[in-house]
Length: 360
Image (cartoon, rainbow, N blue to C red; front, top):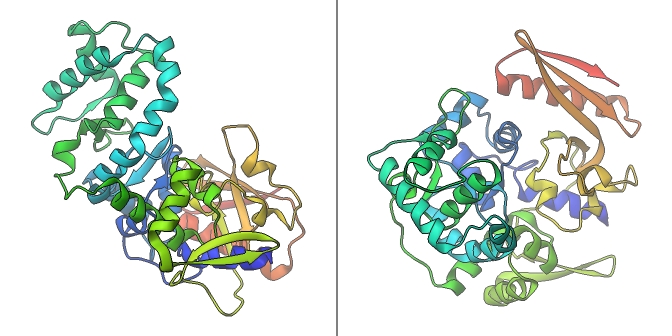
């Protein structure tokens, strides 16, 4: 039955079903896309489109069609401007609560955060987009001491959670910050229950079947909130029992009624597996999910065939080509190998450069 879980999730996430035209459409449909590995996250989004390249996804980020900020959990996510405010209002307080002990250790209280917010608002107003280092200089000049390292990181994180700043366009390879009010014009506000219901709908429509604990993990909310969200959707959700575990799915969640053959080179932190607390469904073939569930924060890129983990992959750039190293943890049939190599070619097309494939 784990095959059924994989098949449904692949279909729901546009990996084996009709794909969308733009990265922004993908991000909106998925609700949010984890993006701490920026390059990997762009590839993850592009795989779900009709063929967007790295340059095209970058352009969507540059123009603000997709924003990158801290939301849901204390890590980076892609979101679209229309969703960023209600998502921050719903999940920001939980992230702030999680980070409170570290803020106390760093001697960052609300007064310090408010001073920093005023500095950011002043220097970014008028469409200015500044790097973290440049903002640190302005903080120091304004008398906000210790604006470096982890302390600076938490000042920026809280400014994101409070809806003051979000991502601006990159300057060469440097990330910049912009004012949220200028990057994402205000949208109609939602009540907490309306926001919770909408986040629940987005999650289960694209990640079914899943459990309340899966949703709580992904959203950063409590299990109590997750169950309340399920209750708010009422008949829109149906219960599925698979291997004695109760899962939930939206009644109209896309899924394939016939078996398909697929292979994917998924980036680390891809929503296909990072969106679930229990990732055991993808590990049946290799009997091991440590590469996507271990304590190491540097989760590797993974190879999946029919949604099941079969190995790892790495990227490296040499002159004008990209070197893709494949590390297989399961024996592949010839057609499976051919499909994996075809995915390498798709990755090379995304980067607009030739690929050199190396198999360990």
